[in-house]
Length: 193
Image (cartoon, rainbow, N blue to C red):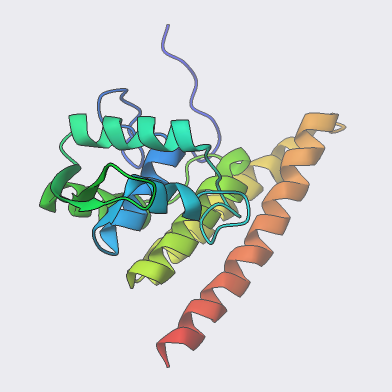
């Protein structure tokens, strides 16, 4: 028996395949390299909890290097040279490939599938898009429509019967998400002027 689709779910919008899907830490690393070549230590510094990307999604240094290895295996990044490290040894300079750059643009342009992922995934997309100069207004418009359809389905479910804790949480989360997306759209429009 096929699984019932969640309210607002669209398999065409965000296919879930393990061979294509990257983890958020991998997207964060790819977003940093989209901006220009860099080495792992510098990328790890930006992913510390107080880093510009790390304040949204942080990774330890070992997880950063693991993410870089995965991106290399998938053909999204490649080494382009070396430079002398501060503490000795050489640092490998990495850059995003054409395939990696295209994958990042596609990921940023795709609305987040689940309400529960908005805080982490949507915020990471917005921060990376701003730093990379990628227009996210069309994605935000589709994200607002997606969340609005989820909110409508939740409202209908709430009207049918007394809501449980989970439905109430999802309902309130969808309303907050709609407010945030509206403000994010205004912020993006303001940057464009």
